[in-house]
Each structure stands twice: as C-alpha cells, then as structure tokens.
Image (cartoon, rainbow over all chains, first blue to last red; front, side, top):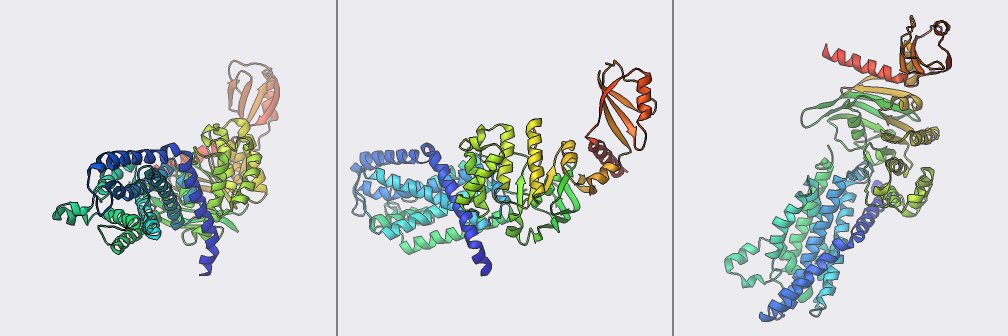
Length: 262
Length: 309
C-alpha cells in the first residue's frame, strides 16, 4: 500500500506526460486528424441524411437524419480512437522512440493508460466536432447526457486498446490498415449505424446480435435518442468485458515485450 | 560500491544465436568504463538487456544495488542511456523531447523546462530549442541524445558509440563534457569503435568477444602489457623510402612522418644515433596515442585462435 502511494505522483506525472505528448501530436497534424472525419461525416449527413433520408420513413418516431446522427458520431469516435493509437504507437516502434519509454521506469500500465487516454481524447474531440457538423442538418437530441458520455468514453477506450494491440503486433505500415479495413469498417457499417436491425430478416437480426459494435451504436443511440435495438445494460456489460479483456491482453503483451523488445 | 553488476548473463536469440555466454561484470561507482569488442561481439546485447530493450535468457543485472528484474522502477531511475542510433521523435521540437523525457521519470514540467535550459545551454543547443529534431545536424542530434539522457540526473550514464560520425572538434568538446560529468560522480560506461577515445577517457576496460569477456582490468594495466611503444617522428628531411633502422621496425607514413616501434625498456638514444648516421633530422616526436588498438587486435585475434583450437 505504502509503495503504491509512493509511486502514485510519479506514475501520474508520467501518465500526464504521455497524454500531453499524444494530444500535442494529433493537434499538430490537425489537417490529417481532425478535419477529414468532419468532412466525411458532413458528406454522410448530406447524402444519407438529407438526399436519401428525406425519401425514407421515420424510424422509432425519428426522422432518418435524426436516427443516423448518433451512429455517425459513434462511428467517428470508433475510427479515430483506433487510428490514433494504432498509428501513434506503431510509429513510436518504427522510429525506435519506444525505447525512451522502455528504458524509463514507467510501468506498462501507465504506458497503456497514456496511449489509450490520447486515443480517447482524439475520439471525443472528433465526436464533438461531428456533433457540431450535425447541427447544420438537424437539432441535437440528448435523452441522457450521462449515458451518452459514458458510452462515448467506454467505446473510445475499447477501440484505443484494440488499436494498441494492433500496433504491438504490426510489423509494417500495411499491418496497421488491415484491421480497420477488413474488420472495423464492416462491423461498424453492419452495426446499425444506418438502420435499425428490426428492418432485417429474423436470421440476420440474430447474426447482428454477435456484432459487438451494434451494442455501442445502440447504447449511444439510447443516450441521444432514448431508442435502442439492444438493452443498455447488455451494451455496457459487453463494452466493459471487452475493455477488461483487451486491457489484460495489452498488459501481458507489454510485460512479455511482444513486438517491442528483442 | 558497484554501480552496475552483471551476473552470469546469457542471451540466446530466437534463431538459436548465442549472443552472451554468461557475462560477469562489476563496474564501480564513479568509474569511467570502456566496454569494447568487435562488431557482433555482444556489446549491444549487454547494453540492450541492462536498458530493458532486450529480454535476457538468464542471469542477473543489479543497478545501484537494485535488482533490475525485481525492482525495475528503482533500478531504471539511476540509468541514463545514449544509444547508438537516433531514437527520438524527429517530428518533435527539441525542448519538448527533453521535457517529455523528464516526465517519464516523474519530473514535473516546470522543473523539466529548467533542466532542459541548463543542458541545452551546456551542449550548445539552446538556440535550436524550438526547432524540430529532424532539422538538426548529426553532431547536434548526438548532443541532444546526451542532454536527453541527463534530464533525470542519472547516476550511471551508458553511452553506446556516442561520437560515431561526429567531427573531431565536437568529439573533443563531448569528451571534456563527459569527463566533467564523471568528475562530478556520474559513472560512465562507454562503448566505442574509436579506441583512442576509450584510451583517453576510461579508467577501466572490459573487452568482449563472441559473447564472453576476454579481458577486464584497469586501462593502465592493459596498456602496460604492451611490449613495445610506437613513436611518431616528424622529420625535417623528406624521405622516399622507409629507412632501415636495425632493431627498430619503422614505417614511413608520409614523406616526413615516420612511425618507429621501440621495445619496452629500450633506450631511444641508439635510434637517434642511427637516424643521425643517415642524416635524417627529427623535428619533433610523440607517442602514438592509440596504443590500445594493437592490444585490442591482439586479444581478439588470440581469442579467435583459441576458439578455433
């Protein structure tokens, strides 16, 4: 206990250092990190929300535009928190400045917490910007601020951890784009961002329930609109379960030095 | 007290290559220690394990009386490292690199900025503090790595070929800086391919070859093992071929520079008499300073022969 107390200020300063470094990193290249998701999501709002959405009937008593806003915000949080950590940690490995961290007395937990927090900050910053962009097309609905913020932070944490694990295993820049392209994007698009799974045939509804992204999209939609295809408690349990599992895997990988030590 | 103790350290890489065959080494507090060896001898593996960049296969490392593998935080706190390759983020401003480094060691940003000012001024990088690291010259990057390693005031500084690729003037400046640091109590462990550098700076030395320590002693003791000394003579008279000096093997380096081997304990009067007889006038004379080079080559060569037998 006393040793934990003694180490707390040290670990906190080290944690703060990594977070500041990460935030400065993505802020410095804002044209690559902050602007593109705002433009992409703006296009989604125009094309899917206004042009196509205006021809579609309401879902759960919300216009199609209103219905897809939470999905698009959480989609941008997912992709940005993931890509922030995967690209930052991989380039840290690639340029060897991971050695600065390995040589120093920072605990593996602090390294993970620092990088994940950097990813969460970027995810939330982009989420806020996409929300602001959505205000040009529709009104903001917030059913519960607590649920909205909780799901946003938990989802960003989960995908930051996933990005970290991807970066640990990555051996080239190609390896950091495989998971987002072939796993993350399909899961997100099929996770109910653009539709309610009630619109699917029964078989595909059952299949969709195995997609973890569905719970995040619907948990977030519950926070904003108060409607969801899945139970909120189930969504929170699933997200927390994934966070604990990925957190434990990340700790074990860094402890063993996988991908970072010879 | 030992600053660093390495006990029976072994490393076998995944491909089966045995890099370290059980290294034992003790480096005293305040020492300026040279760790030398040919390429692939195991120097970088030792340093990599001590710096937690490479996993050991077995054995122990004690840093300032803290077991690196049981109490990594306490052990690592005492260690500063200047690696062979540039390993900072080249897209970060110099000052930020130093401040972040201090943060990793639990130093608050306010204090870190003060320390970065001190070291950037000492290493003549203060004017460049807002520039991106990628814009620095090779010598400046080396100095930046030294400044970074010192930010947390380590008691042991490991320098892996710190002067590789820097010009002689910067090298000399770095030598005086390191000597001053050592005088103030920092234990310095140096690997280098410039044997003159090790000879000039280091008090003790270990030579490693094929994963084993083949020599570990005081620098003066090692140099005393030389059975001859090399004198460099600056000649007034230009020569075309090397003169034949009986009992003194000589080599003409250029028309006015002659290197002569003189056996230990042998008088140089005889040498000058011979030169006189040949009407060769000597303007000045000095000891060739890289005496270590010959010893190093002898030791490595004899170790190789022993392994083959």
